[in-house]
Every structure is written in structure tokens, then in C-alpha cells.
Length: 303
Image 1: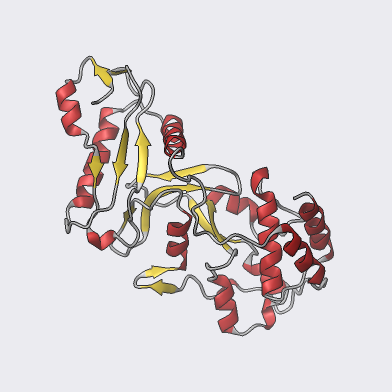
Image 2: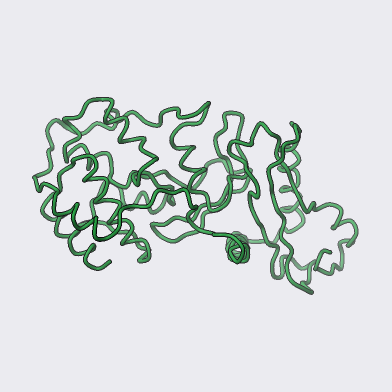
């Protein structure tokens, strides 16, 4: 039962209007494999509602039914929620999502999904670091991002970026467009610890797919000598620890800086970040600068 009493809205009408389960057609099953998202309705959502018991959770799940109108119904239902709760602010929405994910976390892992490749352990990272060559970054020939072809098509219509967004989602991506590009979902940004949620009507996802070792950094550390094919493989390597979905804000702050100039603000991720950085540099035979080597040594010893 709906655990809220109402004053101006009829209870029966409210219960009937908000579904408990939503579905997607089979055509979207590649990026939508339920359960997709758990959204709690918490606290005093508007002057019309008063909580009287534990909040419900609306589950968005994938379905095998070939219903081409499913996405349209979803968007209509989300619009209803916004009309029904006009005073619900963005901070409250984010808090609601966070609380819901925490609640679901009692029965399933929330945060980074299990199929994200983990970097090497600390002992291996220290050994790799000792094996890296220290050299001055190369500035000529000048770096050109176009030298690293990305994002490339991986499967069907999905490119590397879209594969990583699906892989790194805290829960399944809940909506895609006609080109199978994610248009809604939830991600936990490891760089800053922020939970990123994007509703189905988002014009642009506030999430980036970042290269752990930036393309410019790689170019100056040896990639300028690589073949075009190897640079393409490096820029699209989603099987290793090189690509990660993070908040747009944190990715902009990082830019092309190495660990001597930038580290994740989320302290819980710093050790993993350093291990991933060292692993990528070692795997691709890239060099390190003196300041970079000192920073890597400092941080790996703090793991």
C-alpha cells in the first residue's frame, strides 16, 4: 500500500496513477537488464503529502515483452511524478536516490559493479613502478587528440563510451535512445564520491568517461612513437583499468594532469587510482617524469 496520507489528492487516484513496476521492450535489453533503478519516495515531498510509514520503492525493470510504447509510458509517468510533487527540489531528489541506493545495498552491491576491472595489488604496483623508465616528457611532435581515434564501435551501435557507461552504472542504465545511447541512469563517481543521477528527460548526461592516464600524458610519455592502431587500442581500452565513468566536474578538474598535480578528492579511491595509473603506464611501456615518479612512490607507500 502507498504509505502516505493525502489531504487534497485522492488516495485511490494517487495509487492508481503511480505504477509499482515499469518495463522496457526487448529491443532495449542490451543496455536495460533489470532491476534497473530503485527510487524511494521519502520525507515530506509537498504540502499535500504526509509520511505515515516506511517509504515505497518503485522498481524500473527490463522486460522481454515487445512493447514499443514502454519508453513513452515511462516518460509520461516521470512527468506525472514531477507534476504531483512540484516542490521536490533537486537536493531532495539526490538525497532520495542516495537513500534508496543505500537501502537496496542491504541485499545487493551498490557502488562500482563487479565487472569493472580492478587494478593490480599494491605489491605488484610497487614492482611495476620500479620498472618504469624516468624520462622528460616529449613536447615535439606536439600532441593532437585526433591521433587517438575514439570512441570506436564495439558491438552493434554501441561505442566504447556507451559500453563503459553501462559497465560502471551503479544500477542498470534505465533508458536509451534510438541509437542505443544511454539517456538516463545512476553512477557513483569515484573521483569525488558524488552520486550522479540523470532522469529520462536529461538533455545531456552529467558524466564523462575518463582516461585514467590522459591521452596527452600518454603522448608525451611515449605514445607519439606508437602506430595509429596502438593509440586507438589505448584510447578505447575498456577491458583494463584505463577507462572510468566519473562526474563531469571532477574530470574537468583533472584535465591532463598526472598524480604530482592532481589526485581524486575522494580519499577512499586514491590507492586504487594510483595502482591503476601505474598498471596502465607499465602495460603500455610509457615513461614517467621525475615529479610524477616521486608522487607515485609517495601515494603507493600510503596504500
